[in-house]
Image 1 (cartoon, rainbow, N blue to C red):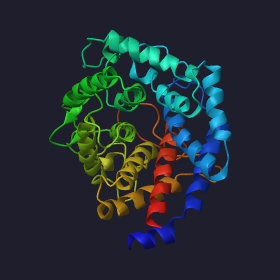
Image 2 (cartoon, one colour):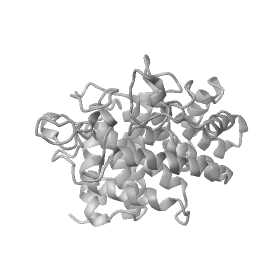
Image 3 (cartoon, rainbow, N blue to C red):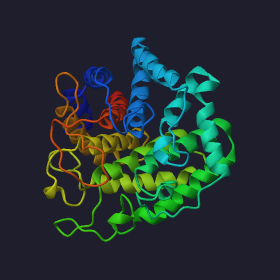
Length: 360
C-alpha cells in the first residue's frame, strides 16, 4: 500500500478529529480522583499536554476555545502553582502546560510559580544519588527514573527559550546526561526504568525494559525538540538520542499494532497497552513530520499503531487498555483507563492530524 493510498483510504482529518474529540470530552466529563490525581499531579500533567495541543487545533480550525477555557479554569483554581515537592520531577510537570498558557495569554501569574521553582532548584541543586529508593525521598530529587525525563526536562528547555538564560539549558544538559549515562543500556539501546531493574530478567531471559517507560522518554524528547530550534547548539544530543531510541522502539511493535508492557518479552504480557503505544505513536509521527525519521520505513508502523489505538476507544470516548500507575510491566485489561493514557492519545492524534495533512 502506498503512503498516499493509506492516507486516503484509511484515515481522514475528520475521522482523526472525531475520535480525539470523543476521547477529550469523555475524559473531561469523567475526572480521575484519588491518589496521584490532584490537579497538579504528573498524571494530569500528561493529560494537559495532550489537551493543550488539542485546544490549539480546535481553536484554530473550528473557533472552539472550550478546551483552553478548561485548562485556564484548572490553572486559576490552583493559582498556577506547581506540585508540592521542591525537587521531584513529577511535581513540576504541569509547568510545561502553564508555560505554554503564558506564551498564549501573556499573564505573568501563569509563569511565576514555575519560574520560582526552577530557579530555586538550579540555585540549590540536589547532590542526591541516582540510585532510586522509595524509602528515601532524597533519591527522587534528581531524574533517577526514566519517567522523569518526560516530566521535568521540557520545563527547563521551555524556560531557556522563553528567557534566553543559559542557566536553564545548562541545568537541563547536566541532569539529562547524568540520567542518560545511568539508565540507558547501550547494548539494547533502551532505557531502564530505574536501577532496580539492572540485571533483572523477564521469563524469556531478556532484560526488563518497560514499554511506557521508554514511551515517557520518547515523549519528553519530542517536547524538548519542539522547543529547541534546529540551529540551537544544544539540540544535537537530544535529536540523536531521539532518532536512536525511536528506531529501536519502532522495531519492537507487536503484530497487533501495540507496544506491550514489556518491550523484550511481549508474550508474557500479551494484552494491548495504550499508554505506551500512545506515546510511541506520538514520537514516531512527530519524527516523520519533522523529517527526522525515515518516512517509508516508519509509515506502516505508525499506521498499525494508530489503528490499534483507535480500536481501544469505546463509542463514548473512554480509552481502554491503559496500564495503571506503576514502574514495570503489568497485566492490562480493556476496562483499565487513566488520564495519562488519554493525554498520550491526544498527543499522538495531533501528530497524526499533521501527518495526514502532509500526505494528502
